[in-house]
Length: 476
Image (cartoon, rainbow, N blue to C red):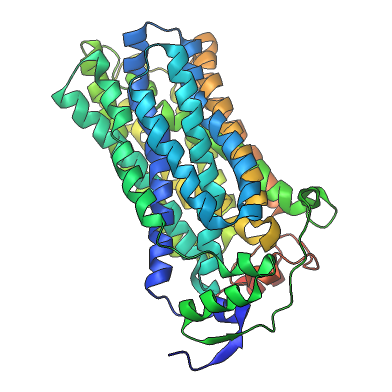
């Protein structure tokens, strides 16, 4: 029975983790897992789709970019509806897109139908970014919020690794140009399971408070924390979407959107085409089309392990070093890795040393992107905006990221075709360096602070690299 009385926000910030916390965390993480699987399985499938349908590199880029473009639309539009209609309603609705359009993508009869179904699938993928991140941030205690958010987002790497492993397994046991259909269909099964389980989670008490449903907020918060929660927390005013671009929030909006856009150019441009790039840089001249695809997919599976390593470092360091420091370091490592690979280019001979350098560059990129900006760009939008704008702000940020992903996926094959692999990787290095600079100039540290503090209009947005900010934000 609840015994202690505490302010609602304080009770949520200082609660001990219980079964409901873990359920919300896991089911949100599984949504990110499905995002990773569906967005990266296409990287294994694209060489087979191109061979089976006989399409050009321009069409390959469009097929690869279709889901990120849909994700841009889904994040932007459904993120706003998540603030208006509630977290739980959209938490269930977005998974319908996974179930229906992943299955339809697998039975596409031509490239046009595949483009449409992948775009519609992307709407669900994009919607899940602001929904899941907002759910986790609003439920988790403030001292471990960063680790829990980073841990949830780490399931993207697990989804990507699972997608690469599934693609490899299908290629090994069914080595045919039509194997891509099985790859795209397999994601329906976990999506159905997660959708059913999500019906059992409660609505966010912070959202109820922002909507004026104070009694309902108190009831859920009391059940969640095991305390008698009072209603002394002031009612938050509902803010218009345009507030994201006001003087009070524009710095935070730039921090939330621009680095994510720049990071996703490289993450998806490199991630989706890792098998293709490896085939050019490390496995040229290694037998038939299918054999070379198997070798490059095996290499991609190996490199995806380093995505998991990067997230493990993020979980370990996110509440110790802070969001901004990790984001800056991550962009720096991404820049170094891409510059190294750009200098290697297409090797004249696939010697052991050259192949080793190629794999080292990709491994460094995967570790640093997930240790830093891939995790932090997902976390920061949940912390720098108030409750009535949290999913809207995150949706705008995620839409910006998915636009960057579409740019990377579409442009990289064209740049590689016209200018070579070296210039392609150099473009990613430039985008990474720009992300570093924006983080340096606009970074605002949020580590260890209450959501009501970091999202407050009165909070002064100071550069995170000042020593007083880092010391204030550090978790003791």
